[in-house]
Image (cartoon, rainbow, N blue to C red):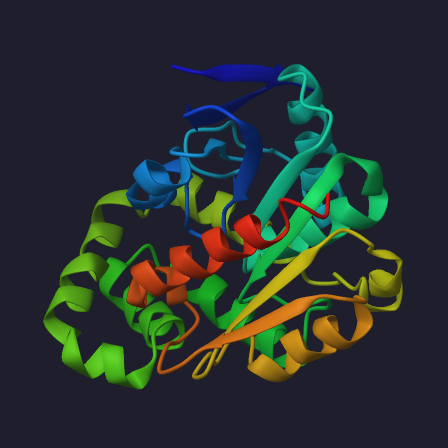
Length: 269
């Protein structure tokens, strides 16, 4: 298994292909395997690297509370371990918060920035949604947890059309929900509770793509508009008829947007 040791923690990652490196950062409840459907396309032209940060996927748990800044430091050390001096970074939702903060703290290490369904500060709505999710996980009941989670993740079109499939996915929580998983999930949610980099967005100079979804309840498009307005020269695209999990609802459109952006900036780096 490909692990690196960072600050006494085992951090899991996977790689595909060769070329310029692009690092994919997980949203909540995601892991390196979440990005596997895109590996064949991305690895044709790029060295695709997926990584589980603290409390994610196969990486070690963190016994103490931490913040987004902690995840950024782990990402920085991870890149050093792989001897990567400059990378493209794609972060979705929670991973977008990590990506934004990394771009602010380590601007010379970011070749381009791709932000999907994320925001520059944790809103009151997101805090309250997070509290509900933490409660759901605390029950250790997969059905209760999935009922509290799933309606927020997908658009109403997708949810109604794929209801049986979504409920089946929800049953997987019954297998994974235990006290350790709950504590990892809780720490992850709480690590973003006071996240706010809005005032620093103007300092980001890397080519930036912002991806929104028309029916995103968790991070509505207005919050991506704020990012677009503050990052000079950024590109903003809205995926129609999709919810927060645009990469799952419309995977072909999602990855086409990403690859088109990367192709468009090849000659300006």
